Length: 592
Image (cartoon, rainbow, N blue to C red; front, top):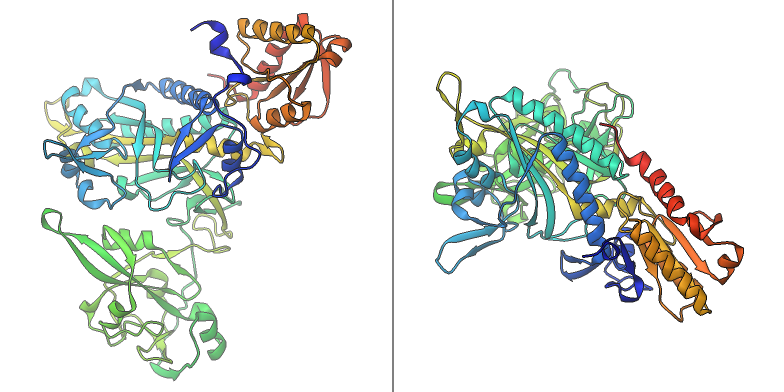
């Protein structure tokens, strides 16, 4: 491949047409623009092809990730997409994960799966490659395809089924070593966000299917996000809403006499509080789930779970699942609730056999006497329901979700709710995978110990989609130089052969000098069409060669999104464009 082919491309034979309109199913603006600009095409639900422009952008993102992983002593390798089931069976995730995992049986009748992530494979290889404490710490990473059969794909590249992820894995001898590598990844992810011109906010998160004790997500805060975030502007506390810590005042006081009251037409908490003249915080409500619990040889057992939270809050299914140990949750059906003697819409644990359901009581409810709850009879409620006297919880814990304005658990100021897209995540896994797959090392005293693991991921396509969402305007993409597939959009506006020759020469000289350039050499197109396509593709610089610019002394240079332009003599173009590209890249280049 010669130099011209590496850094320059003619639009006349570019594989990837621009579209005047995006397909109707495109939900968000960045998705529409990536389609219209000829970056991506959808093959099936949640499965996309990256056309040459997007592929060049992804390669640049990949290089930034590679440099940052190498900077913290990562060793790049490549692990397979297809895994034998026994690795995932050994850790239990084969049984714990639902249909999101793509399983299949090969011709030898062996259970296999498509990789969702690679913790098991890393632990398997570590068991044979690491023997001594002298080989630790270590960190490996790769850029590899993953497949997760998501129930609902959305937002173009935001939530897909097949994607490329940079996943890295730290290996240490103890929790202190794991914490140190975790911190280095945390800092590396902050640098990656800055180098990709994407503002990222690190938030505390649930460990989910990965397991472990500590996890953070790196969020792009945006209204299009599907994750809910709790942010404190006063102290900087940030967490996924599902794990956000907040404080409330318990009602306190002496227990009052239980009282049954008639409450017709009270289908909602608002209806109930209006009728009784009380606040929502003086009520408690029940949210019902059916939890799936593991048994022997992967068998599942379903149990009804009743989560009890204050009426002014919402139940948090993640916390309910974590507290009960359920593998999965689904909403309960009315008949499943009624079988226990509880009445949907007017339910409470009062008078119900303790084994009829798993009663998970939020700690704020447990600490608050004299709440109003259902009477297990239509159009009736109970006043002054108290835990301990009137019912016994199965479990007590934080199972309510933070809402706008609740006091921050760190400083007491009101939390702000926001939306975000998870771009990356980091997990302290501990020894779950190493113990299951016998990944051990021998310490100085000859004692065999399990290796402490960490896992760290970033989705490349999702990162590109977020950059596109952040850097756009009404005319198209406005990609930063670090991610843009080419730095210069060269447009020729020519009626005379001499002008074509001049533009061709400019293209060849820029390519020879290593300037990345996309050359719109299409004949017989109006200037407006070429300019619109140039804006749509979003390259940082536009260079126009035409009879008018040549008469003015050279080529017309402008920044994407800036009206002002200037004439640069043809002999100065290489030096001037190198200077402009360097200036664009300078804020995105970090010192060692």
